Length: 364
Image (cartoon, rainbow, N blue to C red; front, side):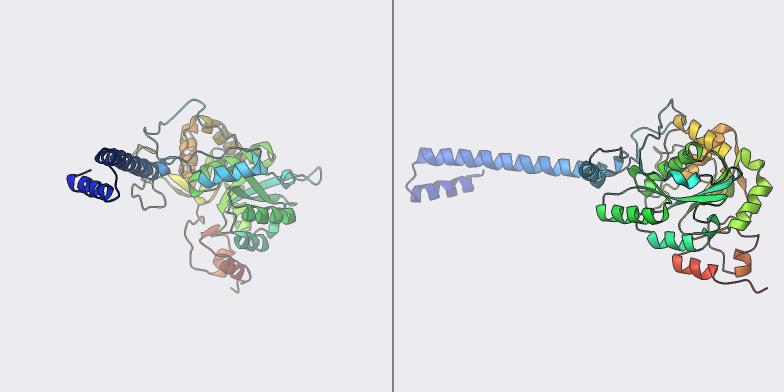
């Protein structure tokens, strides 16, 4: 406390009839309070700055909680670790275990309804809780061939967990109607799509092992199922050791922080990816899915799921197989193209457009 402040305090004490000794004691006490206040403010400021600047570094996945209120509390604050302190290794020993618990588990999705029935294809569609309109549009259009999961083609919408109880309840009610949702208790974020992929693969090999082929796509994609089945029939031997789709054999990590596909040097310390097949739509055999799931235990987590699948494919000695007709963009609409044999997938097709496309016939 400076001299002018001390003089001011002594003056006030004198006017109030307080002795000089007591005045000095008051000054000493004020000084101590002032110093401790400044110290606490500095500490709180530094700690807050540290927490804010490092918050994005901590994204541990949500594990099962026995009580819903505990789960909600954890979900509100959890984020997945996208930036690690040391560069991500290329291999590890049992470092990546997909040990999440089912929140919604529809065992009937791969049920066989007679002794001669087979499942040629199971389709996994990545979605989010809020996208009910997208799911309904897909159910009304290109999924109608599944006969509500009783035909030789089966499907499921895939979700992680969210903290909003109202949204969760809406999804639970939706599932009671359609019985076509699978959900585990990892946090449902873009950074956790690799967990969603492993959930799909685990489901395919444990609950639908009799399915011959597996197709992964998103809820904003037009899928030409008849065309896809023709591709599978034509490429069935190749897909025993390959993943097929809109595949790219050369790609570099995005180092720009503003990019949706940003990957830090620590999370991926190489200058190029081993290629990838766009997550907007790729197909493979259940055999490959089984092998990917097994080898993933020794492949460190990487948040871009299609790149992670490609990393596993390379370690298996398998390959990425580019197939004409798979698009990670939206080609101009022509009903004869979209319903013919030359287009399998089209990306970024909103619900209204999807229904409109479906209801338009080819007149040539």
